[in-house]
Picture (cartoon, rainbow, N blue to C red):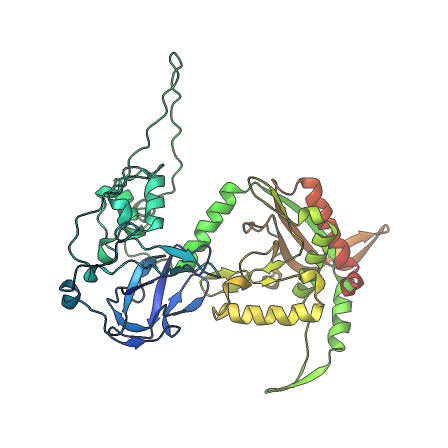
Length: 464
């Protein structure tokens, strides 16, 4: 039987992806493990290997278009395996299928990808004419027979949440499969059905349903502006993901903010000393220092050490339990074309400043060229967002789930301060800690921020 090639899930937030390039053409012979195509996600470009050896057929995944995760993009036929008309005329002794028609059994692979199991569903061209399979709706799904069996898991979930009857939706995916775009189009066209309301007890007046809060539609927005006074730039996957996660974060996480001013003069003096003492190494471009610390490198280290000093704040919220982290893994917001990404310095509290500095430079460079691996930007226990290089004095950052904290760092600037009854000039920096109030209460957040401030103002502690 031919092996189905699907668009795998290479990122935990990935619902759709785009094939940016095919490395093999229709009818080409490929070997298992050969690079078959490249996926462009919202954060990186990933090369996908062939799951089997044979001839590439029925390439339906087009370059540059959104494709639902799990959707078939091609099939690989073993050498000599019947195809097309030959398959239709083949003996009708095809092995029975244990999964619903049009669906493929999958399993998760390392890194979150979805790969075909050893009992992949037979390609329709190799099957004899069979009567439709009767598929009973599963619990919680609304009117999804018989279409549920020919819809992607994402499409089924979205239809269920919207109260949409999948049997009324025409599939545009491979072999008539209903995909996310079909569900979105049906919902936009008014195909969603309201879920049945629970009946109030006898004698109790029913409460008026709360009107759902909806954002302005595209048409409503565009009507506010004169025709021809604007250009429309379609959202790419990165911008769509950023928008979705920001809405999720601000609507599901109760944010709480704490701000402190930190004096930087001692830290800046130590930084100058450390950089001046850096050994010189030979490179292709000539001699260069082995490291060059930035203030942000020292902020990362201080935040990690503060979390270890206040371990109750090194946590993530789940509905069933508080996740208490054993390591301080600090994500650092990096601006890249079209958005941002947060590569992670793992166990930052245990690393030297020079190691953090060089690791951060490497991660930032590969982030801007979209060469990071998923494990390099997923997870983490907190994050740092620094806009000081733009002269921003202070701001409040949005928490990046599943983190419970994020530190927003402003610019270091000379200010007049009062110390021991005297006015003097000091280099000050404002920092704002955003916390998930479910996991980090006000007093605990204050304790964490004070620990961070003490480390910045007494920076020798960063070296031990």
